[in-house]
Length: 148
Image 1 (cartoon, rainbow, N blue to C red):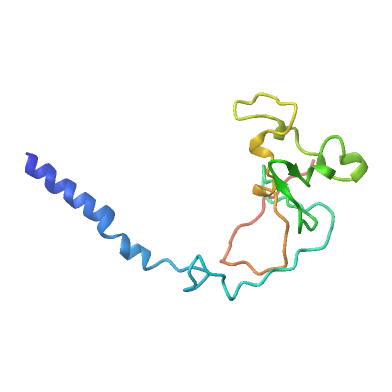
Image 2: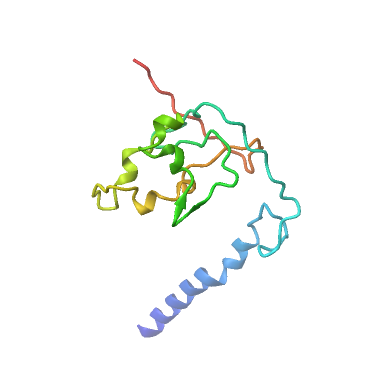
């Protein structure tokens, strides 16, 4: 009985670890053969789109896309450039969209007086747009909403 368990375990371990090289050989990087610790010579900075009206969302709960340039914006634990326009105190004067109420709740849904730490680093979810071709094929289609 112990011998059978050992054989089954050995086969399972081989299937788990012994065949990973077969899958690794099939993965192709968009960087080609350039190592991760070296700059990609084919990487060209894309031109950020000019400031414009808010960008329509493609699905429910999609974080809004940033409709303006954010080059040079500083966001660290001591300062967040986004808040100079989008905070509840500044949004009207700046003519910007105010931060959603959802950004003031922690993981346990406790309402906080300030932005929750998990929502403080805006560019984790909110990203500017660039004029670029998709890197991979995409068949996503946006939601169709019914307006009443």
